Image (tube, one colour):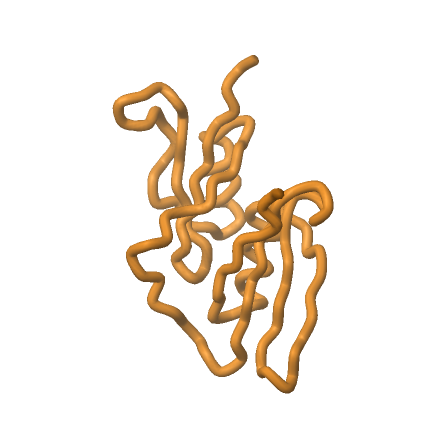
Length: 129
């Protein structure tokens, strides 16, 4: 067994695709409109779906925003340099909500950003080998 994808409902698909592809550097892997159901699915990721888990962005055409609730935490992305990832995020119009630095009660370097819908994304700096 393996994880295939995580689905996020997004209010503005084009804005979300710009964020995930231009700010986070993911690739648009596939996209399909479902006119009878009035929704679009777009899959983004760093590798092909056959090689790893990806994100499914679901856009319901008649919904412009969602209440994120309290159950969802965040998406974690490993980066070489969390400080530089934050700078790159800001340069490309992304929102940094916690600058890079050591996590509380630990030494791992982390940072948090938000996508256009307010979903939290954690950068975790790769540990030296």
